Image (cartoon, rainbow over all chains, first blue to last red; front, side, top):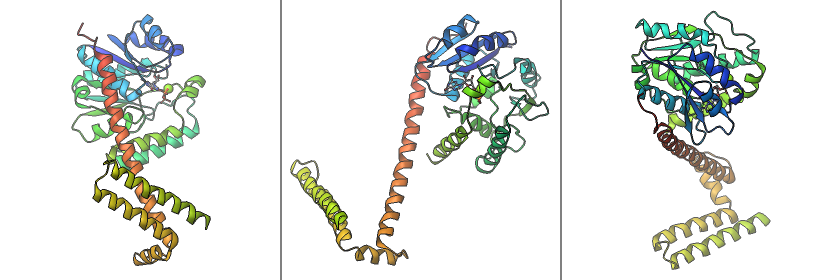
Amino acid sequence: MKIVAVMPAYHEAARIGTAVSHVRVCVDEVIVVDDGSRDDTAEVAREAGARVLRHAVNRGQGAALRTGTDAALKRGATIIVHVDADGQHDPSFLPALIAPIQRGEAAIVFGSRFLGVRSEGMPFARRVLLFAARQFSGLVLGISRRMTDPQSGMRALSRDAAMQLRWTQDRMAHCSEILRMVSQSSLAWTEVPVQIRYTADSLAKGQKATDALKIVWQLLVRSIS
Amino acid sequence: MIIQFALSAVFLGALVWTWRRFRQQALRRLEAFVWSALWLAAGVAVWWPNVTTRLANLVGIGRGSDFVLYIAVTVLTVLVLHLHVAHDKLSREFTELVRHDALKDVDRS
Ligand SMILES: Nc1nc2c(ncn2[C@@H]2O[C@H](COP(=O)(O)OP(=O)(O)O)[C@@H](O)[C@H]2O)c(=O)[nH]1
Ligand SMILES: [Mg+2]
């Protein structure tokens, strides 16, 4: 059993050091994909003990996750977890995220912010946005209604699932794309509750409400191509 | 009046341009004729808008200029979408290239 964490990072020099060292103790290996950052993200991550791959040009979170996942497969991972590099994902949830795969009950496990555990300080506007996103997911994309968190970035994949799910959305739309692929596959999936930290600086740098429109647009362009 | 003269100048220029391209053998004779017909039709529509109005009435649209506008918007929409799809494909291929480069030193141990 080899558990590898994949952390996509773009301009995270200030936060990635602690994030990597916290995740490292829970897994066998940490792969950071530095997505063309122009700050010290790569050096800081390496010093904190991660294996660092580099996209020469910024290609987006979805692309970086795919690259990191391919690398993890190459390195013989049996379980792959996706964790944000900005410290918003609390690594103390990792054992619970991995457990269903270890028990053979699921091929993919999603961390959900809406299963009982309250996320700290989530703004009201973000709640409304997530509700709208769920309606779009169900109606247009055909994502299972039992999936409670359309934009959760914390997930664990078995080796099989990682090989089978070849998402091609390079930017933020990969979350929806993965949920849709899983909904329409025969892979066993489940959700576990996770808590996300909404701190001032992670919110300032993170996704804005208008980015939701970009995601919708990217999914639509792909659907007519 | 001003708009009619301005547009006429544009279409006349296009006509001259088209036949110059023909002389340079960049266009075949048939192609040059088709383009010429298009410029002439545009000129007719500018000076005798009734023609487009009659066409518009045929499909149930009241005004000729509306008819032209609807067609233009439709064509532009299709072109823009086409551009986005092509851009999407290109950026996926670009990602594959960047990924290939990022993975080249990864090995088993
Ligand atoms: N590889 C890569 N990672 C990104 C990019 N944009 C954001 N990220 C990373 O993805 C994670 C989540 O991004 P963030 O912007 O905080 O999104 P949010 O947490 O959903 O608001 C963090 O680890 C970021 O460093 C990008 O363009 N490329
Ligand atoms: Mg974040």
